[in-house]
Image (tube, rainbow, N blue to C red; front, side):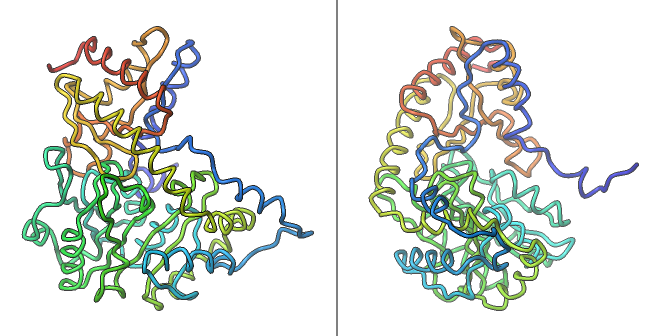
Length: 398
């Protein structure tokens, strides 16, 4: 039997494909510090489960395809805090940010079209686009420049007749970059001039450090009809398993057409929506405490990496990731070696090789994404393990 080229051509997740090695390491008695995946250890606000426990209906029935009114209303209030004003027919609830991204690509691109994406990028952008025969055209950024965008001319040269949208995460995954207001306005200007959509993945909006100002594409005047804000409760409220995401746009026609996709999968899970509506009532002080915790972890990780010979890492300013250049011949081989052949008194580390976060062949081969989602003591120990591993790795280049 022959499977579809669409499926077989899809990239395997560079984040999850090494999980069997981690399982083997644990079976061998090793303790693995998981820095490979953005699964926060921050406690989910109790309001989520309390709302679900208080749900008192005899039947868990289908809900509206666009989402339950309580959740949409809660999101409208949330966005108002950021001077983003949406109406009820401008928000669509999705099965996680992943479905929001997939729906957005399907809505604005036909088979054979292209989307511009700053690389390195969230690896699933590849999966979402290739599944519907859309090509990623990379805007290459570098660790030396802190993964900020190249100038307007360099991006303009990448725009082709088949280019339909720009997709980017801000703050960035896997880089932790926070794009400046000037960068956001430059992309908005290009989108307007060349009639492109902007699919703005802003799920890490609250995680910005060093007193930087975050600029949402939802706040840029003159492009509201072409901006699609993708959001999620996963990282904001440490509720990854809830799988509640959303699309928000001032383009009412886009939402109306995208609703056809939502209708085809009937609805998002009822109980998770009930819980998510409660999460959006969380007080602002929650974000302050969580942000402070991640900021502390960021500096523990950054300072430790700065002390390791041959490691290149600019200080990230958002999200909870760092994309780090290592003095190794091949980052994937290094991560496998860490799990199979190395431990420091029973401890080892798992990271995500970065080559799969690039569309340009060969880039990122000596880079890893590190998620600082562990508690302070665990992060410090993980960095001790990494330092020793880099000293002992047979394929080290320094």
